Amino acid sequence: MLKNEFKKLVLDTISQHAEITKILISTPLFTLADLLSASPKLINSVDLMEVFAHTAIQIKKKYNVAPKLPALPLNTTIDEVVEYLFEKTKLKLEVTL
Image (cartoon, rainbow, N blue to C red; front, side):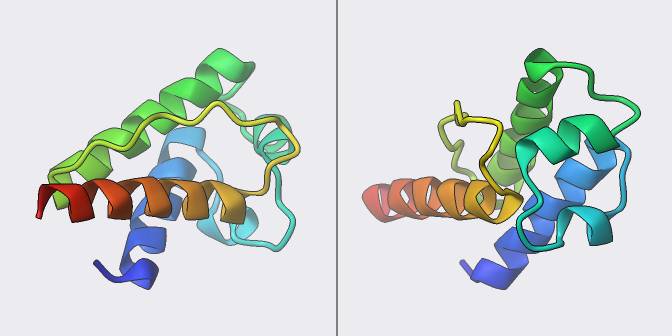
């Protein structure tokens, strides 16, 4: 599993479901709170969890592994979210191999 390919999948999915540009969420230090305030679609943390659920579905489709959905504070950066999902997915892939 290539990390750049994985990151692209996660960022594409988040940007699509949050209805904001991938460029915006790719900026350094862009947080989950920033995502909530920038997105015309997301209103609260429940909406944010739906984005994570859609992202997990895409990861499952591509890698046949479902990562545990994160419960992260709103000051978590998108880069940290990607890293979290990557590590959880990689760990599950290693266990299943």
